[in-house]
Image (cartoon, rainbow, N blue to C red):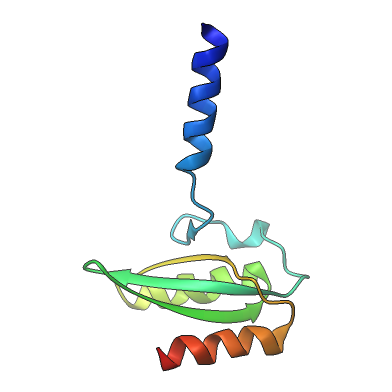
Length: 99
């Protein structure tokens, strides 16, 4: 019985875990500053959200978002986007801007 309960709790934890990270309490100095990736940035306030894409390292991404969040009261979070290179990331950004 304990094994069954443990299995159910483990599955629920996986289902309700998000890959998005809120930037407010992250120590950017501990993040990767060598590998560029495409990051999906989500800004939200009052239940309204907008997304953007950025090609940079995780540290650069978080530092930029923390700076912009300090100037505004908008919530910002980020996650890795499916883009193999900078051109593919910029294409995602163009598509997001046109929608």
